[in-house]
Image (spheres, rainbow, N blue to C red):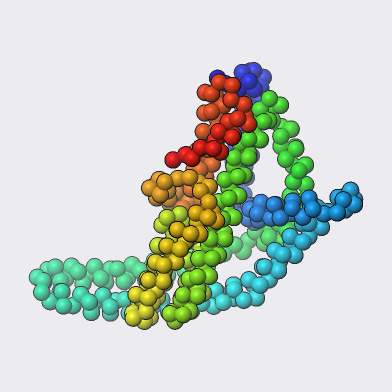
Length: 376
């Protein structure tokens, strides 16, 4: 059974016109993607800060709410917290990471020489026992491996430097974003009302339920992942400092960042630490592997299920396929975002399926059914 708002031709045309307008706006905005990056980041930060601002606003004294100053003050407190955090990062964390990144860049040739020596030493006894043709092929493969790694690292570092945004539009966006975020947070309720005003009245409840589905899933996933990544990064940093591995802060940062890639992330985050330990002090490589294994078990058994929850409700096998598909479609960004995007698409499809097939299923009933079911 189709929703009532879709049965009227006028309502259908209005919905289709709204969708066409949104698609056209996205196509236009995509041409200015580089300039919009700061605003996208600001939108994510505003989304994360919104519950904090709403909480302070709700619990502000009544006279402040009547005077209309409670929400601006709540935003100001959120900004003080955010800028304090950023100041701490700028004063210690970021300079240390940049310093260790520079140190790593200078050490790359030495690491590659050690890798070349290590491979040749370990293969020498084996190569002495095989025919000359196979020996030549293996030695040639080792040379190609080292040259390939050297070229890849040089191109990767060079590309990173070249893609640091230094355009006028980007810098201008960074300056404007804090003020833009203030208006977004301050007028959040008005913006939501204006958005729903564009929706046909009979469809508004469906749109509200879909927005609730998206908000519930993304808020649980993003905030949970941020906290899990922070905890994993801290644990890796402590472990690497105890073991005495070089570039501990940089490697721990990698481990925390890769936590955003489901299933495969912890293993990808361990690779740089293993390589640095193996090439710097081979005796510590086993301890690094053991430490990362223990941390990965803590993350998968205790942290993720309890902090991030079961927001996406995907089987690990499905997640692995999604990560590979996301990597193929959108590279590293695809690996980061494919799971929550797929979960949102799945839950919205499920909601629409319930609304169009279950007789008498109101928007709220379909939403409650969806929340009560564990999918995949």
